[in-house]
Image (cartoon, rainbow, N blue to C red):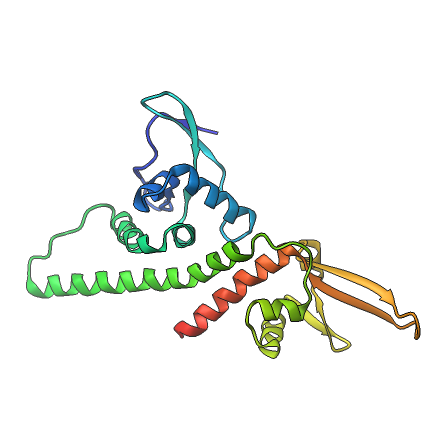
Length: 238
């Protein structure tokens, strides 16, 4: 890991390089302790809601202690703030506008230019707010159910998500998550291997009929909950 001697809150971005925001800057934006922001990031990474980020290190200029922090992309910063302090999302939107404009903006010289600039900024802010609306339900779901343990049936998960079973089944099939085998919803093998489902096999005592029972694992519940929340949000915005 690289050790920076400066506080990682300023962004010197080369042309074509992705703009990121540090966990320390997020902490300042939402008036939260940096340690709490890092804990939220790590919990969301472990749940698969945001991408995986390597912890970076910096030396505090005052006490010379070494601390860790994260650099996250725009989308994931929305999820983090939505979980920490949703009331501060406007600050986040404004800060991203500053970062993406390069920190500077040409002053309009005429009234039409000023009106066009105002319209562009309004459109950009609305677009960022829409992205946040998609991300927030996903974070809320994880926050509520991240402690789920054990496995759950399709019907139990549908009830947990307040989803109509036919609609939820169609969603799983269209997303390539499950398919029907002898009219029974069965998970794709890649999702079983990823630990999102467990499949139990057995036979009935009386008829000796062989059966398979697929259940969502705790990891699978958190994962599908995030996808479903995003699906619902997009449907509401359409």
